[in-house]
Image (tube, rainbow, N blue to C red; front, side):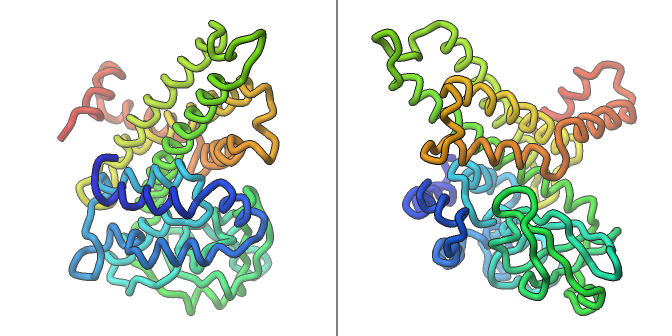
Length: 332
């Protein structure tokens, strides 16, 4: 994260998105001051073209920002809003103020229902996919009930809400690719944060007169964790490789599959090294491992994206999987 934009975001999040601040918002505290500071700094407009008042960056240029959302267990949807505003600007829709998240809708009993809206509890509007169509709907007009992760909700609108929502041009399948790339980047950040805290704990926790990090079994687990963390980060960067906004399906499949795989392994080993006390509220580790488990399944788990990558290989006509991997990872 050696670019000035990511460095500025990192400084703000270090100051404002502290573990205590995350806990307070998760417990029902007011998130608006944190969101206002982020929004007023202009970070959420990173992908909006300069002609429309944004920074005019491409997706690969905001990987560091998306990753930082995981590094700091950010309890407001900065990553989602960055992508949503970029999408809306390119679709010719006036970019709304406030935060925006993504969801898929279904019809239930005459109502429009989004069963799981990630970070919906602290969002202002939702870019909803219904079939192949997209519309922007306000959260305030929906009935919200808790669902999934502590910041997630299920939203229910009356059927007519779809008709009065703001139509948005674009392919819902491409939007799903963008969501998966986002979660891969956030997973990469959360994986690194979980590893760093586990390494620090192993060097501090004393057993039999020396740090547990001096024991070979713990060193082996830390080495395996490091392999997962850095492989996941490389894959997540590939998933955000796009000159404009929407990445290639194979790149996203590799990114989301690898980061979701790593989420299970790293979360398990981190808690094993902590002797399971990392689950307790006073340890920061659980802020990250809970997100690892939630984001692992968001926008498709590793099994879903493995099938996407497999279909791509079969359709490519390549004789060897290695040839497909080489083609996907060769820099353009």
